[in-house]
Length: 108
Image (cartoon, rainbow, N blue to C red):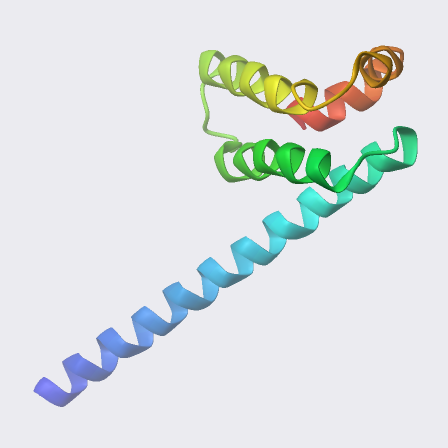
């Protein structure tokens, strides 16, 4: 009986680990899509990409349908800060000229 219980817990732990890996791959793909959308519109240095990726990873890890409206608004503010902080003034002006891209990057 103990062997069956141990086997059950091993199977459950492997399935949980596999789901976590799938989620990380999904997040990485979404972040890469966001970075690609941004870099096609605004050329970025490698350092700028790294800083912006931090905010996008946080966004995709925390954004969920059951998140309250207040928390979503706070998340949008934080991601917007991560998006704008490494950009130059000229890059910010170009980004602000495309509100659809900004909305996609910070809230969707």
